[in-house]
Image (cartoon, rainbow over all chains, first blue to last red; front, side, top):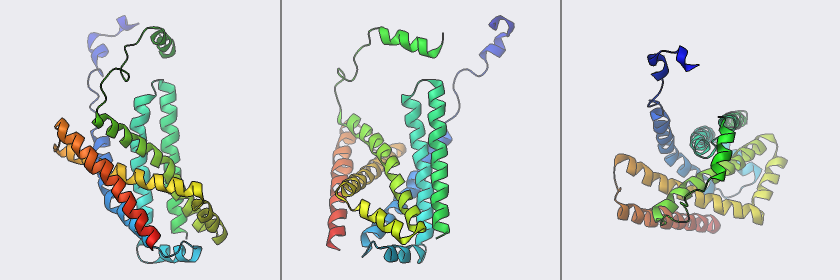
Length: 123
Length: 135
């Protein structure tokens, strides 16, 4: 069938994909954002006197805690699906299974992130 | 030929050994640990989401969440997750320094792995839990 295509048509699209730099940068940027955010979260959790419902809900509604937690969850899920994408691309070679896993992971991350942020906002 | 029949052919041919033959380097271990802790935390982040769902649902639901989280298995998961977070974060900083071009020499990379990533993560985990249990 390739005899019907001319040489230019057969050659186009091959070679370097010229794609992936933005993924690399986004991975690093989300990591840098997560450095202070996750540190804040660890310190906040460690500093809580009690983990009862009242104590935690008082903490969540006070100040910027809700905003920071929602941001943390959003950025974590972004960084997470970006990292898992690379893992899936490395280890799954069947094209159909790879596409399916990528779809499942990314959709799950989107839904979990959105519902978690929604739960915080609605709190 | 289709991909799966190609894979079947590959499976029948002898393969050259790689993991059993190539000399293990510390840098290889730290790299695969970085990936493993990332994957482990991908599962652990579900706990954070469940906690937020429970908190927004009802006091009963949240108390139940804390009850299971502070069970022996829950503590085991929390210990592991905190170490995984510290290791992945510190090793991640090591990665970011590599991205700027610092520390690429093999001896330097192995040393930063030992001290910064492994020892650093163990120390930070110990400090974190000592702080939590003292308060």
